[in-house]
Length: 94
Image (cartoon, rainbow, N blue to C red; front, side):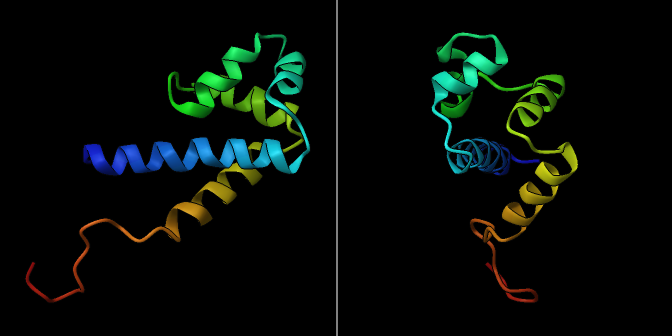
C-alpha cells in the first residue's frame, strides 16, 4: 500500500472511531474513563499521534457498544466510498 493510501486509510479509521464516539454521546474523557486510561490516550489516537493496535481496537469497540464485525463493516463501507486520489478512468492514460 502506498504511503498516501495508508494515510487515507488511517484517517478513515480515526474519523470513524471519533464519529462513533460522538454518535454515542460520549466525550473523550467519558470514553477514557470507561477504558481506564487518561483522556490524552483517546485524544492521541483520534488525532493520529498514536495508533491503536488490534487488541486496543477491540477494547475501544466494546466500550463503545459496538462489535468488531460491525466496526469493520462500517470501516469497509466508508473506505470503499472514498474516491481514490489520482485515479484515472479505466482504460485511459494518466
